[in-house]
Structures are given as structure tokens and as C-alpha cells.
Image (spheres, rainbow, N blue to C red):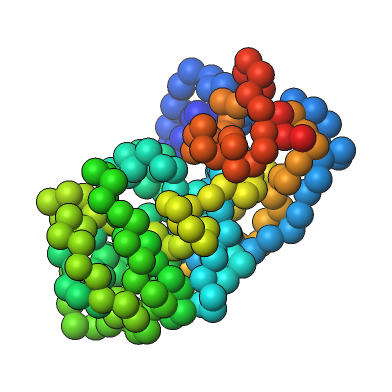
Length: 235
């Protein structure tokens, strides 16, 4: 069991809390028989838990091949939802070939990354081509990301909760699930973010479904898995 006790300030004290359930198990089957790969996670996505469904940066250059959190097709990407792990919400309406996100969120991307723009009403995805440059100095409220391709979608706006994400698939919704993290990693946030080295689950295992994050119906199809009761089977 994991203790939830904590110290509050530098003074003698005693804190009593109930016991928590501890860290959720990921594997039901023996981990040693699963197909595991070592991968690099792109910087800027903060703390990611074991069991997070991951996608692969599909840009032609930039962070190509790096892992990023999978963005579900539900489009329910409001801040605070699991789907928001892999996105950068707009903080100002975009303008032709400019995307405006928070300065911290801008570090989720690098020059050469190709972005997909969307909103909670499923107005996209709208592609921007590769990122050309970042301006993080002009404003303290947002970063100005200059992209290759001008976009004109009228609903990719703050009023429609627009957001940007890395393209992780060549067609359709431009998003696809590929792996599952098998350990917790910290990719960092903002200017000091460095990314992370990790291992990921590919196949030949039985996982606890409730220990997985963003395992949508579409992700299950992408991963080639099957849900059986409280288990997720990767063949």
C-alpha cells in the first residue's frame, strides 16, 4: 500500500491520512514475454503515466519518429480531459500561417514538425505543413508559431476551442495509436523540457484495461488489440 502522508513546512508534526490503493498494475500477463521496444518521447508533454497510449511523430523532418501522446478522435480535448495530454490549445485566434499557443505548450513542437489543427466540434483536421520558426519573445502571453501552409478554416478559433497537435498519421484524422508506455516518464515542461527515454509495449501481453489512458475504440483498432472484460489483450 502507498502512504499518502506528507510533511507541511519545517516544524515538528504528525500527519495521519488513510492508506491509498498504491500504483495500479499494468501487466496481467508476465512482462518478460511481452514484445518491448526502447523509444524516445518528444519533449514538452510533462509527466506521462505508464499505460498512456502513444503515437509516433509522422513529420517528414523535425521530431520525426519521436513518441507523443495519442490524441483520440473524440475531439473532447478540453483542458483537464485525458485527451488534452497531447495537444496545445490556442490562446489567440490563428492568422493565415501563424498558430498561437502558450509559451510552455510551444515547446511540445520543434522546427520541422507538421501540425494538425482541430477543435472540439471536429472542424478539422487542418494541416499547416512544417513549422518554420517560433517567436517566444514578442509576447509574454503566447508563442507565435510560423508554419509553411496558410490555413483558412473559420472554426479553428478560440470560440470553438481550437488546438494544435503533431501529425501522427499520413491520412484521415492524422492521428493513430501505436504503442503503450510501460513506465512513468517525465518529458519536462516549457523551455527546460528535454524529453525522455522509455520502453513501450508492442504486443504479446495482457494488460489491465483500467490502467490505460486514452484507450478509445479507435486506439484499440490501431493497436490490434481486444478488450476482454477488465483486460486488454495485445496479440
